[in-house]
Length: 274
Image (cartoon, rainbow, N blue to C red; front, top):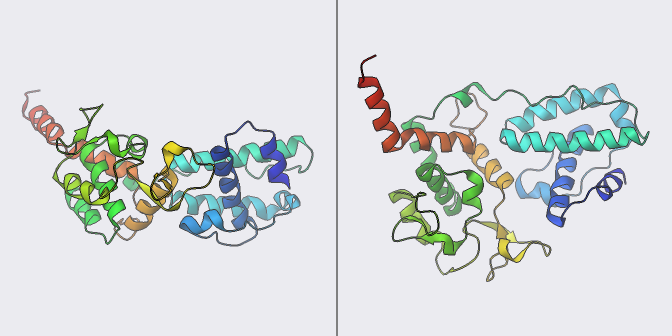
């Protein structure tokens, strides 16, 4: 299989190899005119068989361009760029081997972010997000991201013993603090857990998952950036006037802009004489 042959040439950890395989499978679905499954079903679904000769047909470029636009509306720019880069690397390797002659990926570029990406979510829009009928994990994570304005990756990497719940801060990074919303939800999310990742997947982790990325009691794995981004964008699509759905970066930017210190600074700057 062409994907297996390509992955054999890369020095990847088991987790990274799985990410590469999922990304390449994501592009395989639209190449045969099929819609990929959503969410976690996409990870476990057997990918369609795609003859490499299909990549040399005129339809391949159009189908990939359409798939790129649809994917841009579902995931953040970082995830999309990574997935496109993985596909570009595989296509380049297959071309060097002489297995295909064309390059349907060459002219593809990540689409510009929706117009709303340069705007800060309003306080009412953030309130609408928190009124969504999302699960406890999502509501806790979104509150934590908004109230701390910390990098998404930093929050996803948190373990239970990193948290100083009474003081509403991290034990080893006191500058990262949260407010009443996250303080109310975190104890509910962590009920009965004293170790392991704060944010867990819905299912047990794969056998190759490092011990630090799984809950020792339930065996569930750490929530990934990809899955967290998919859930947030999908949930907020009905709220976005453009219909794309917002990204986690939108929520973090709103948290930065709405922090009391930021608002006080802006008011001071507006009041200062020119």
